[in-house]
Length: 409
Image (tube, rainbow, N blue to C red; front, side, top):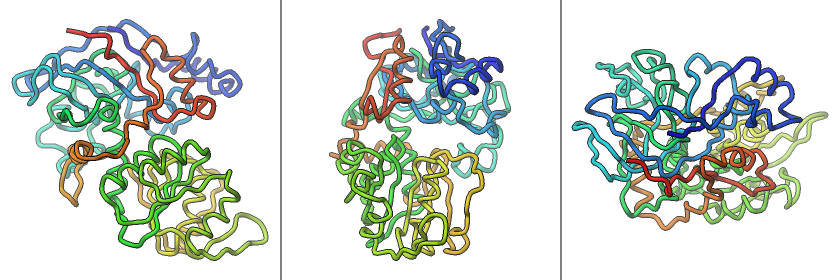
């Protein structure tokens, strides 16, 4: 079958890391680590496994971080290469083992985490037993290669391909009421639901969501799907991002085009500003909950400055390394900083995140399908990458690979 494969090479890594900023083709072109290849199709690994025709598969910011080498090496030991990328997967079952819990023709989303159940460990580790497979302590063990999730594991192909296999514990049936274009976003939307439930907003509270990428729209959608009683403000770079945020439930938006960001935050929250001799303005007052959905030094700094004393910053974007970063507001304002990684089992309500997300999508009129802005075939994977790197030019949010015209048996 055809698949987009990332094969890590030290010489190619060094070349792209050193010159990719000026020659982006080094990330995805002929001399990059990324190739469209013919690979052996996966087969069922046991009676609890199913094989799925990939209909749609999303391109995620973590995929781009790997391809462009903008990631922390701290997680490198927990992945394996060469790997078929793609962990946002929606498709139809084409073959199922007798214990898979699905049948041929079922529409399914795949929870890509490779925890104890997928690896065949019983009893599971403490974190998997608690319903947190994203924190599994055995992601380098068993007869499946190292990998926290599909797309970063040499043993199991990810969704940038024609077919994948998945364990019963990873499969979630998608009802007909959820259209394909929404179904492909169940994985990132589940990240948003997990983040929104990490620190639920209370009635009358002010909430800030920072970012104009998929994760910010996942959090905005989750707040709407969960009927959050807070007042949500969306901070984005561009007008088209702000417009989409309002369609997904944001009550107001903040963009650089509307004036200085600090002025807009002051007007929205009633916070008071104080200017130090040097450096950014200090706020007293601000947002009760801030979701940083970007994960850069700048966005995290904004999140800490714009959170009220005693407030909470939820770090949803994949922030890695900080250089000479001022953490004063964390202790001076007694902020709570909470990290969010993937999804699992929610406590209130006690439900698997994927199942809760699908349930809410099946009954909503929220136009989550509008988040998908671009569709490509696997043959056009290079343009798909460019559409994500040059977001302003393409006005792209969620890019997906569309295999629906190519059927497998």
